Image (cartoon, rainbow over all chains, first blue to last red; front, side, top):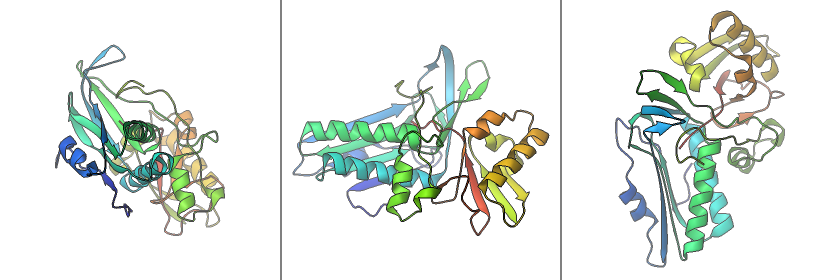
Length: 186
Length: 86
């Protein structure tokens, strides 16, 4: 995992380390690059009209890292090869304002950097096995609905990654996307 | 065969330790595992919804698995409900 030296993929627990955008920008910097893009996803205070006090994130790290790696490979294939990419996602109990996800892309030109960053965050949000439980100001809490990983409709980063690692195609399942319920609202 | 199923998302709150152990026939495939989870959930999980299991996928530590697939040799599986990172 994470064999490409141009990719940095991290899953720090919030109890151990907060996400570090400055370090992400430093990683994707290169003297030959004129463009850097950065996406920051934070826990926001309001979701679907309810006041949010925090979010508990959980994840299945082995497969999350595979999805992140495949997302970076896809971005490099589409917009590279000259790209440096950082993807990190926090987990544990996050408060409003805490960083949940960071994606950074460095490239020779802005179009490559913008498109790579956008492609990766969409894959992270819709295909990585990450879950969140929203905690509300009124004391209630609720698991967010999300994107099913078992729809036969859409090829996925994860199933593509599996194919790349010699997994039998008949045993893999693609993913579908559904509406977000928190995060950046897309 | 014994199956050790690690639960994620809302399923993780249904079972102490977020791990469910099931005893299935030696020739069981993942369709059989799903049926066993459904049966267990209906009997033991008050907040269980069959539709959620239907929207979830079984996986090993390295790949998603279709229902026709065999159970991994080590009997270890994970149950992944719909995801929502970011």
